[in-house]
Image (cartoon, rainbow, N blue to C red; front, side):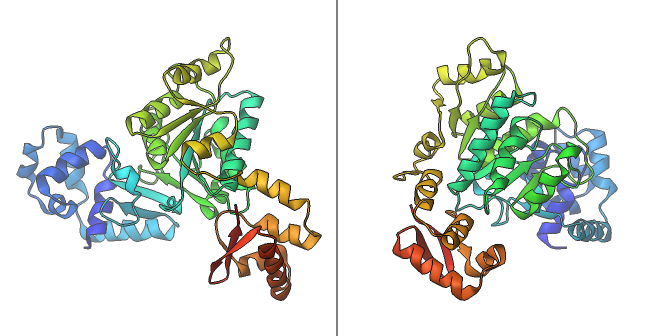
Length: 364
């Protein structure tokens, strides 16, 4: 078997989480070493109980592992572990980093900044609207949006990102990626696989459990460059994510709230402790060191006033992420020759730039 299959086997053993995997790897050196070790060697691993050992020994047949790997792949689920180049580099640096990730769609792009948006499940209408607004505007500025697909703030922010042409958003789940939880978010769950991804450290068929969510919160913060807190009660999951982000050295951005509203007690405490107070997406861009003369939303709004109808159609398709001319044709229904003329006109107006190889993006 290849090294990846041994890693896949290791990450599929029930009850063997990142800490036990780390202890096993420190002793045996590699997943293959664990797979091939004699049973008596496991007595030296102090945090393994008898049940853990039985689970490790139970499925050490190569043909079973290969079959399980191919069945997982046939379901559109991919697997990536720490030794691979695709594994998110910033995730390796966090305490208790997951050894492997299961995902549908894609993993966040390393070359693009990412912001996690978190907040209450029982969020007010205003908080949900603000989450959607910030998710949309961050995506328009080429920022990947990370969240947990939970009710309330999470899904609102991710819907905002999905509204944007080629906006990318990633959901980190507290269950296997083959399960859509909550079930009513199935449409967003499917869309994210085309415009981002759904990610989990838990093997497929793993149900949602209360203790899974604090675990997944460290991955949400670990994948991001900054964390935007829309609303957080004292002791809430959102606060746990923000605190994990602080430990990981992330930028923390917080929307202020009423001092009489318990939904903002944790948020206001974060501001008191030095988190950045934000009222607009530009505050986040500046905090991440992305200095533009104006953000993408404002630039596009100002620019569309002077454009012809066909130019507006093409310009609306573009964002800070480069897009191929063939995709523009597919999404607009315009002829390639007409699109080329429009793109040339937009370039002359200093609104669009050619990235090369027929890729185009808006110019800031």
